[in-house]
Structure formats: structure tokens, C-alpha cells
Image (tube, rainbow, N blue to C red; front, side, top):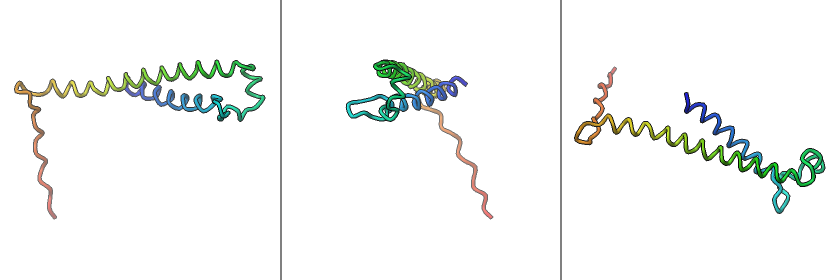
Length: 103
């Protein structure tokens, strides 16, 4: 359950981070210049850069935290596998598969 919630948040952070990075105006203009004067009216003259920079930092932090959390939860399965091994340190083998039915 926790893994599913973190995965949804992670995907949302990924998509929003992509959008925010593409909207930033770089040296060449980028996709942020497509709005023209409309973005200046919404964000103010210099406010768009500050807002987008803060959003980028916030969602990059969220992306990293969810990445680390999901990696930790995935490694919990490895710990359970190690605990299930016998005292010699060898993992108990699986039983052989049943024979195939022939027609």
C-alpha cells in the first residue's frame, strides 16, 4: 500500500518536474517564451523565474525523496530473503517443477 502511494507521488513529481523544467526560460528562450506577454502578466516581470526555480527545487527534492524511499522499500524484500536462508548461509532451493503433461 505504501509502495503504491509512493509510486503515484513519484510519477506525479516526475511529470510535473519535466513540465516545470521545460517552462523555464533559459539562454535560448525555451518553451517558457511561448506564452509571450501572458506569462509576464500572470507571474509578473521577473516573478516567473523565481516561481519556476522554486517549483523546480521543490519537485526535484520530492523526486529524490520518493526515489530513495522506493529503493529502500524494494530492498526490504532482499532482507526477508536473507533471513529465510538456513544456518549455513545458503538459500533453500525451490522444489522442482511438476512434469509436463504429454498428449
